[in-house]
Image (cartoon, rainbow, N blue to C red; front, side):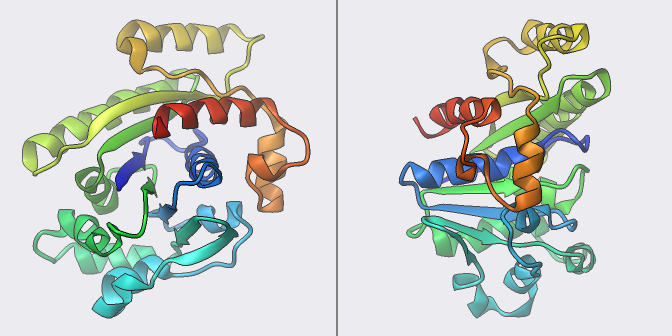
Length: 247
């Protein structure tokens, strides 16, 4: 089982869109995939056209036996989800007083090792207990970033967070790649920020996801890009990213 965290400490960088589409794309390729929403906004459920649910709270608090059946089918073959909701804020308060709280997700996932090929965490855009716990549980970190000055700063922040977590805990997570999003070929800003990222991180910078209105339409309809009738530029770009993740 491979575990991947999608995280950036800036919002609005297509983090959830990236996690959802990569998860569904991997499932379409035959990988049994679990997508876990760690953000109290619950955007994963919305993106997949699912009702709101507090699966994360029930998984980690309500009942230890629930560890084995807290995930729910997404309505797509080989893709299950653990949904988040506003109860996640209460969950953070509960976990803050627990020992070994940074390992809560690692412990929970031990029941799933024989079930899933791939687990993807969609993290909140902040440094909190779940971002730390996701990094501790993960094999790899993917950092989506919008190509503007402020979002690119978030890349530096999340990499620093990973370094700090690795120094302070038993964490083996590695930076897999930086995923530029909202790439606009006609703007100087997009090209300049992409060049800056490549100059700093080299081959860790993955091919960018282009600006594509199909992403908004898909989100509004509760579908992934791979469920849209017409192939999209963003969908083709995410397919290339999935090649890097499941190769």
